[in-house]
Image (cartoon, rainbow, N blue to C red; front, side, top):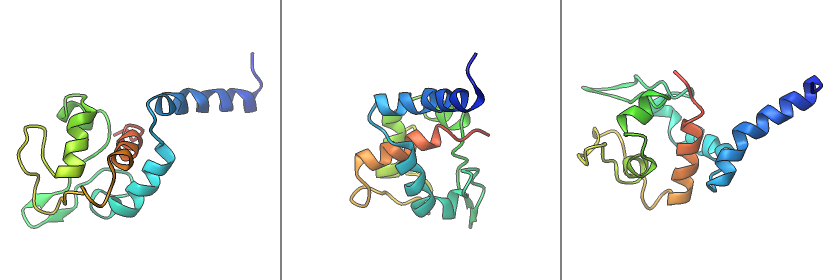
Length: 118
């Protein structure tokens, strides 16, 4: 029905539109993730980096959404305040990014994380 190039562009829009609708930017989120998060969570988000007894979390879907009860608010708290889904502090290597990232930047990272699949 659509030539290959148009089909690819149409499919790209289907993935980008939800992020645009909620004001997030997955491209900016990827850039932030790669610069600020990938050293602990790996470039593909798979985690598994050991810090003594702590191990960095796998941030890929669908596990991430299940852990954080499909709540962007809980994911935002994890990034900005370093608190888990139950409100407890995350393992010590995970910093609280509040003051270093804005809520909008953290939401961009969350939007990007949702594109990563395990």
